Structure formats: structure tokens, C-alpha cells
Image (cartoon, rainbow, N blue to C red):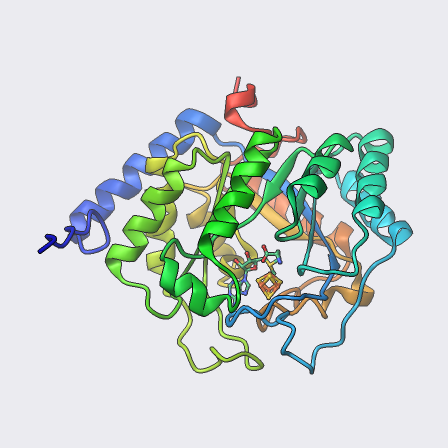
Length: 333
Ligand code: SAM
Ligand code: SF4
């Protein structure tokens, strides 16, 4: 019989957790100092061909008003990201079959040429040729979270999809020269202390440039509406363990964690170094309803961006306007 693996962290004592937190804070400072990189997210479409059990954008949610921004509107939103002084625009969407790969490529090229922003894409799973096209058009980074590294749990949570396909996609992205990010959701059904440990160790073995860990938030129009939300403290420790295992990675405070308010945001930034703010235009931002409360705050991009700088600076952080690329590409030097 195979011996059960002893959990390395999540069942450890309170003092071990405090030690981990301190160690991870020190690593954050060692690699990124007191810098907080601000990234502006533009949520370009909420159409999705997938049916993930946890997500309000799933195709089975018939109550959601669907939208797809056109090229001009996306470019204007990217201009707003530039205007507020952020170095990176993140274009995110559901896995939208109605997106034209060529149109995305043209848009990325234009943003790079006319605005000089770093471009992160988070558009789900596409074939290698499409990722290659977007990379040739200038896309710098790609975010594709695994959500869990447990094969069976993955298959149940993302009907019709397999973990191996997502891992292959990450390999293609890395191969094509993207800075690559992935991550987990904490608090999903079937999660155990061991699976969280394994998930973070597995992600570390992928040598990612970015790591995102966010708490699950139930959405009333999904099959997981009755499942409790992810525990915030566990999520913070998962981020700390992520920092320890991947010290040079960019780690964002996700919007799901940000829902807990500024005190939690600031606490998380002791181990994280990136704040992602949705700057999706007011006309559609409320419809990017991954979970309740998403995009429910200040609507004007300018006001949203301006709100955070003084809070961060008062807490002793600095806010560079640089793009904040990957450590392995010299961003930290
Ligand atoms: N469709 C793309 C994908 O799945 O990679 C990108 C957009 S998807 C909405 C972005 C992220 O939202 C997912 O990677 C997942 O981590 C997060 N998400 C979805 N539903 C969530 C929920 N109920 N609670 C917390 N995070 C959620
Ligand atoms: Fe679609 Fe992404 Fe939501 Fe899954 S997580 S339903 S792929 S938007």
C-alpha cells in the first residue's frame, strides 16, 4: 500500500504559519522591495463556451446579459489604462468563440504600437497557432489558471475539459516566449489540506512568472451556489506558501480577495506585489459577473485608479509606473 503523504503546510501549527508568513514577507521584499505594480483589467467579453461549475459566466447561466466589446471600445479602455499611469493592460474574457483571433492580434499590435503598454491576455484555452499569432502581434504575458491540480476534481469542476489540456496550453505559452501565469482557487469542493499543498508544489514545478490564488465566491446562478465561500485566512496562507515556493513570481491580490476590503488587500500585499483593478467601462462592467460583488465598486476608471495610490503610499508601498515584467527577464534589477 502506498503511504499517505504528510501534508507539508496546511495542517501545520499556528507558529509554523506565523513563521511562514514572516519568511514570505521577507522574500517579497527581497525580490520586489516595497513596490506594488498596478495592472488595469479590461474585461472584453462575458460570452463563454465553457460551463465551469464555479463561474457566473458559464454558458449555462441564461440570466446573464452577454456583451462583447468592439475593437474601438477596447482600445479606448486601454487608453484609459495608459491615462491613469498603469504600465500593463490585461485583456480578459470568457472563452468566447465569437472572438476573432485576427482582430485580437490587430488590437494587441495597436495597443503596443500606439500606447506602449505591456499586454497580458487572459482569454482561456486556444490552439497553439492562435497563441503564436497573438505572441507575434506583441502580447507579452498570458494568464491561464488551473484552479486545481487534482485531475478528477478538475474534470468535475470543468465539464468536458481535462487538466492535461490546460497543462499543455501552459507549455505552449511558455514555449512561445510568453511570461506565463497560472494559479488556484481556494475553497472549491473536494479541496483538502493535501490537495492545496500539492497544487502549490505542482504550480511551483511549472516555473511560472505569475501566481494567482483567489478565494472561491459562490454565484447564485451556478451549481455551486450552496457551497461556502473560500476561507480568507487559508487563502492568505496559500499566497504566502506560493511566495515561499516561487519567491520571484508576481503575485496579485485578486479582485475576489479585494472584495474583503482595503485592510485585507494591504495585509495580502505583504506577500503579494500586484494589484489588479478592473477598468472595464461603466456600460458593461456590471455584466462581467463572475461572482456577486465583482465590479460593484467605483465605476469611473480614473477615480478607481486614483483611490488606491494614496492608500498604498500611506502604508509604505511605492507605486512604479513601469510594466513590472518577469524577474527572469530582468524586471527586478
Ligand atoms: N475564461 C478564462 C479562464 O477561465 O481562464 C478567463 C476568465 S475567468 C472569469 C478568470 C478567473 O476567474 C478564473 O481563472 C477563475 O480563477 C476566476 N473565477 C471564476 N469563478 C470564480 C468564483 N466563483 N470565485 C472566485 N474566482 C472565480
Ligand atoms: Fe468560462 Fe473562464 Fe468562467 Fe470557466 S472560468 S466559465 S472558462 S469564463
